[in-house]
Image 1 (cartoon, rainbow, N blue to C red):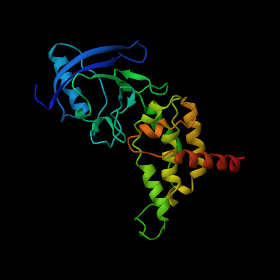
Image 2 (spheres, one colour):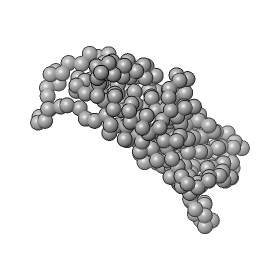
Image 3 (cartoon, rainbow, N blue to C red):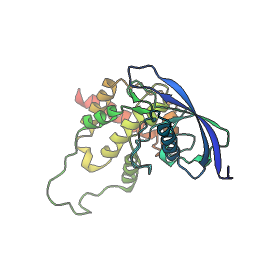
Image 4 (cartoon, rainbow, N blue to C red):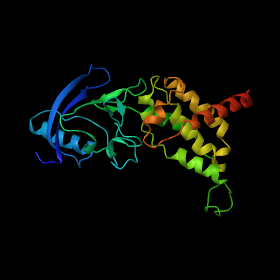
Length: 253
């Protein structure tokens, strides 16, 4: 074994579907390069499993650049792993030591039923976005850049909220499986800009109603969501959403 390779023991959750009882399966992996990403290590493990005649471990991935939010794994109890502001696909094996045991599970939430192994159904997040609707914009040519002046503070806050990649780590980290950080990021992203201001009251009411329909838990402000978020979405978005929801509820009445 070279100085840049490590041996590990992986305890990985295996489950056929949402209706089956899952279990942990132990896999020793040897000579893992510390330059590998966590998902590359899983690719190598699956090759060994396939060569041995076994069923490969199902897990989600797409861009592998920390953009799409597909790489949802809970690693040693932490959504996306031990590094802050890092998606699973951006986590590298140099973060671990030779001889470590790594426990890998799917994101745990009632609203995220297991499809297979580490893959969960997170379409509930898509349905909440859909409930928010569209923005009212004129068709035709794009407007002049100065036609819609936006204060820099608002544009900065909107862009920070827009960084949310919809991975669901906030839900997996929350003891109540709350989706408040996710929803508040989407509400802030559009509500802070003039293009989304027209529907902002209807949007927050509809998205919160859909969140309740999807059976996400309530927020108790423990901060686990912000700590687990790979894009460092701030909890101040939740406070902004609560203010908007209260105001919209009074207006609706």
